[in-house]
Amino acid sequence: MEQVDLSKYRATGEAPMTDSKLDLLGFTTTDKLEDVLASVVRANQVLTVQALKNGFADNFEHGLTDVAVANALLGMGCVSKRSNTQRFYITPSGLHAGLSTKTPPKELEKLISTVDF
Image (cartoon, rainbow, N blue to C red; front, side):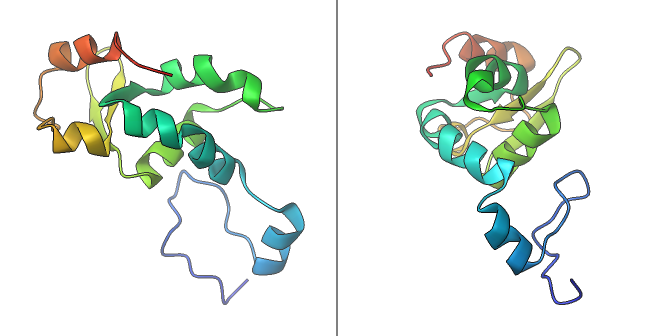
């Protein structure tokens, strides 16, 4: 365990594992989430954790946690924007389209209503 590269881990993420344990498990929830969410992240400019949990909960045997979904989005290059009511995740295509953490929440909310799964 002392030789595991900890640079890619977040405090709120999954615990680090040795290579042998990772091989034994085959994959982590975050890995599977990133595979499932890849096309959704490419197709949308703004996402929320709750929308993704509602859309993909059936794909996971033990359900999804907010932290797991948030970590997967951040790992895929999304940027978090907090408002008074919820947290938005601006995808790389949204950033490319000119959205940023300074974009007003009302504008982000309009884009959420057009989320494409």
